[in-house]
Structures are given as structure tokens and as C-alpha cells.
Image 1 (tube, chains in turn yellow, brown):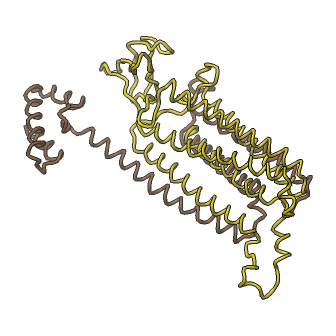
Image 2 (tube, chains in turn cyan, green; image 1 turned 180 degrees about the vertical axis):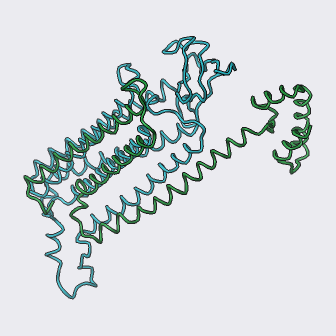
Image 3 (cartoon, helix red, strand yellow; image 1 turned 135 degrees about the horizontal axis):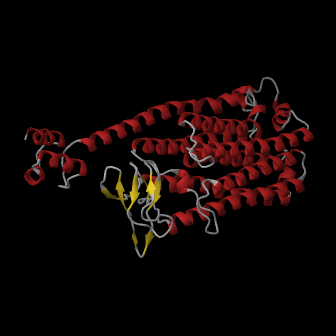
Length: 278
Length: 169
């Protein structure tokens, strides 16, 4: 849309070397937003690849459906439901952003503001969900960047004592099942269990790097959402003040922040895949 | 959205919302059914499950970039300059995951070795082995002395050579 518009203005022959020619038929700002997003994609990929590498290097890894199975209000054992809700919130905010850009193309100021406000609310909703998730992990389950109480059994066996939550003495478990070592009265309480071969063992903490990777990668994504919300607020205020209407370029700034916002959604597709699904 | 009318592009948005929501639900469904949460005792082979989830995520990524970010309507030069560099990631994924797998094997190998660690802590597998040989205490003591010699004279002996000596007993 705007690319055609600008191309018509600048497409004068013989002026190719004065910066007037637009081989990509996109404005400087939009093009640079694309290249910024490309570089950001590499940053995120590097983090996710680091996650994969460390996960591959460990004999066991916490099972995500076990780790991420809580819901606000003390509901447990609902694997992946909460994070699916988070994903929907982010998808919905991406959709409202598309609508804002479309209204911008029609030079409909009120429409742009309306859909941008919905997008901002979506972003805040996502951040709220993430805040709850982090609070639970840090506050209740005592995971930190150097400590991971989510371990995984490597052989079948039977518990010798209960944890006062879900596990009772005599409950059996299978290799590959994850467990949480509960923390109360100032310390962790790993359970004793008996393996099929008759050995008595104690639950071990899970791979340390899990906590660091989780907080760092979802935190980096959450920081993108947070800064995105700030930029959305600034740009929505500018839209409301009539600044972009005066520029008369079909609200290109809204389009640029839209690219960024969709990118945040795009990254979440992969964070969701890597951390929660696989 | 220069190539579509306003009404058409509104439809694209609705379609996008539905596609992304349905694909996400499918992904979660595959994860839950594949791991036996929905039908008790039913599991999908891991390669089907992972294959399905990865392809669905790639489809979502394609949809967001092409329709929401309007990559479909950009000129080929711009599309290539943004998308082609990401192919480098294929190398990174292969190289690093192979390396991760090799760390895994290396760790496993290290844990199987019947030796005491340099800190003098005897690991479980080792003590079981010693019991078989019926010389638990002796060997443990000797091992400890060796370890302390290792530490005190800063010898270049590595764990490898210590383990060989242990086996010769």
C-alpha cells in the first residue's frame, strides 16, 4: 500500500544514485525495522539453540507438562492449559494490531486508537500471566537461575515416604517421570524411594541450567513484550494527538510498531514450542 | 495490504485468528494425547509428536510473517534479504545439537568409569563393583591415598591413569 504510494513519488529516472531510488519499495524506517528484527531473531535463536544444546547434553530434563501444570487459584495438574491461555492472549493482541494497521491505511484515526488500545491490553494481559508464572516458580517452587528442584526419575520404583502434597508412601513411579522437591520450613525435602533393583535412593535436584535458561529466555521475551507495550502506548498517544495524520503517510509508524509486535508473537511461537511442547 | 480491499483484508484477519488459534490448540492436543494425558496408556511415537509440533510451529511462523507482517506483499529482494540469512540457523542447530549430544555421551561414559572422583567421594556404581571383588575397605583406602597424592604433588596424572591402576589390582 504505502510502498506503491512512495514508489510513485520517487520513481524518477536518472536519480538512482542520490538515494531517491527504492529498490525494495519500502521506506527506510520499515526496512531497518525488518533488519533489526532479523538480528533479534538471531539473538533469540542463539538462546533457544543454547537451550537445546544443554538439554541434549543432560541425561534427564524436567518434563514440561509436569513443570507447567498449575493455574491461578491453586489448581494443579492441568498440563499446558495456562500457557495456552497466554498464547491466545498474545495471538489476539497480534490480530488487533493487524486491525490497527488496516485502519491506519484508511486514515481512520479513531479506529487506529481503538485497536491499539486493545493491543496494549493484550500485551499487559500476557505480562500479567507471565508475572504469575514466575511468581509461582520463584516463590512457591523455589526455582532460581542456579537451582532447579524439578528432577526426573531414571528408573522405576516406589516411594518410601510421602511429601504431604500428592505423593504418599507406597506410590510407584516410572522412569522418565518428573518430580518436584518441595521446599518448606527453610529447606528442600527430597523423598526416599526404592528402585526395582532394591536400592534405596533419594531424589536429586534437576539440571541446574533449566532455571537459568527458563528465566533468561522467557525473561528476554517478556522484556520485548514490555518494551513493545511502552512503544505502543507512546505511538497510540501520538496517533490520538493527530501527529501521524499530519504526516499523511498512512500511519507508517503504526505499521512499524506492528512489525515489531508481530515479531514478539512470532518469537513466542518458538518459545512455546521449545519450552512447553517439546 | 495494498493488494486487497478493506473488506477482504478484514476477512484475512479473521481467518488468521482462527488459523493460529486452531493450530495452537492442535499443538497442545498433540502434546497431551502423545504423552498419554487424554487416553490413559496411549502414547504417540516421539518422532510423530515432535514432527507434528515442529511443523505446526513453522506453519504458524510462516503465517505470521507472510500475512500479519505482510511479507507476501513485499518485493522479492526484500523478502530474500530478510529470510535467506535465517538459513544459517540450520547449521547452528545441527552443529550445536550434535555437540550437546556428544557432551551427553561423554558424561555418561565418565560416570560409568569405575573410579573415585578427585574429591574422594566414591560413587555408587564403583562401590557396587568393589563389593563384588570383596575388597571394599582396602581399595577405598588406597584410592583415597592416591587421590591425595594426586592433589598434593600436583602430578599430571589424570583420572584415566588412576582408573587403569585400579583395575590392575
